[in-house]
Image (cartoon, rainbow, N blue to C red; front, side, top):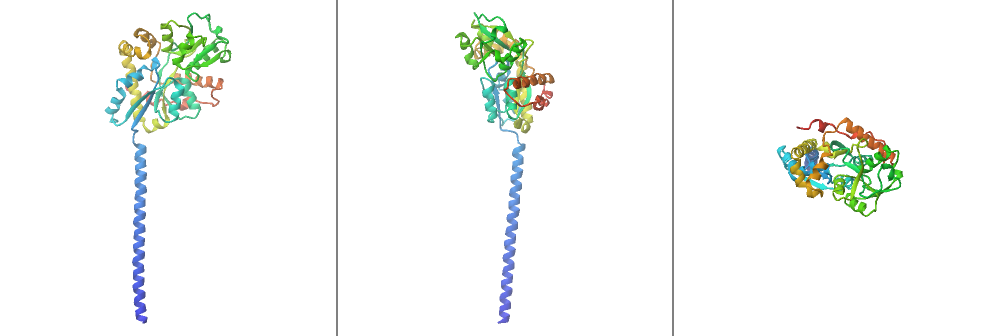
Length: 350
């Protein structure tokens, strides 16, 4: 019996060893497989992070100075340039916004990646905590903004604006322009009443005497003159350069530097194309901007389209920060240089 018990013990022990070995092997295999799974997942995540985006969402606005953006869209220049650079699977989407504030909302929601915009909405978005980079200047020009008054208005000088209603897109660079005009004439925003109007509402508001004046940009300026309902009281000459940056979401720029560079390169090509064929494009886009060809050419002549962003632009944009603080629109101190990426301008292909 003792021998039998010993044999049973041996068999039991042998079975136990096999079972332990089997369990251990299974656990080891599982661990290896789990480890491989984690490694594969980490690898895949790394690949997803390093891969280029599958889309590029571009925000544009119907201002005359932004016409190269429309050429970029309508001539399919950007999509073709991406294909040539082996980014043919990147889908390009253009979205038109009437002004900067609604464009900012779309950027804040992550719906836009790169866009053209005025200085005030660009800077105020950064001050609000949106992660943005300023990568270029779409256009500027002292004569691209004006204060308009009715054709029969008795307002003949800036000082006559005291106590008057002035229509403008609140939060746009027209507000910065008006601030500078008033300041240059020893007045302040507190000396006038601001009426928030979209660009589409402004001419009607002026003709119906809902406002006494408008602070606005092209093509509204030329439209009002062409319709013989408004005249220029003062423009930005000597007081306001009218910077309109090219902006981008920081995350998009950092993840897609090559696509960002292609965008800026192609935007510069569109600018050059417009300069070389101004009459052709003025005829093509006259109806879209609501003015005839010759007037559109005149409006275009007031805008400079450098694309490249410089230290001088940074200085001018820093003054926008000071305007926003002085107007209690923002409270945060900003060094605008911290949000400018000069590298794309420096590498634009001619």
